[in-house]
Image (tube, rainbow, N blue to C red):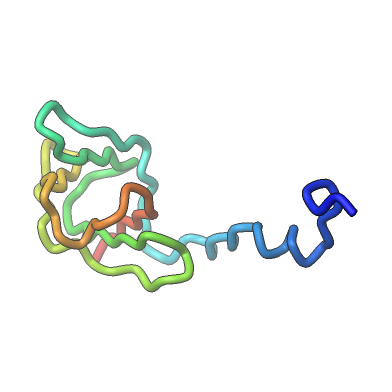
Length: 99
């Protein structure tokens, strides 16, 4: 039996990523994420960054944690310094919430 070509449905379901829950009240869309020349992470929001907190999780199975070291840039960008302790993985999920 060729195990690579013969996968059961259980294997397929185990490889699927959980679908995120619908946005919560007050959440904003993050339109772009990029690194600046010094390695800081820049997130562009769909609306003003006034009163916005930023949460992060490395995977959708873990709870979101608030990122405390966030600076506001312009009217709709947030900057996370390169050495921020809350972000310890090269991938993850962000959530921008208006307080």
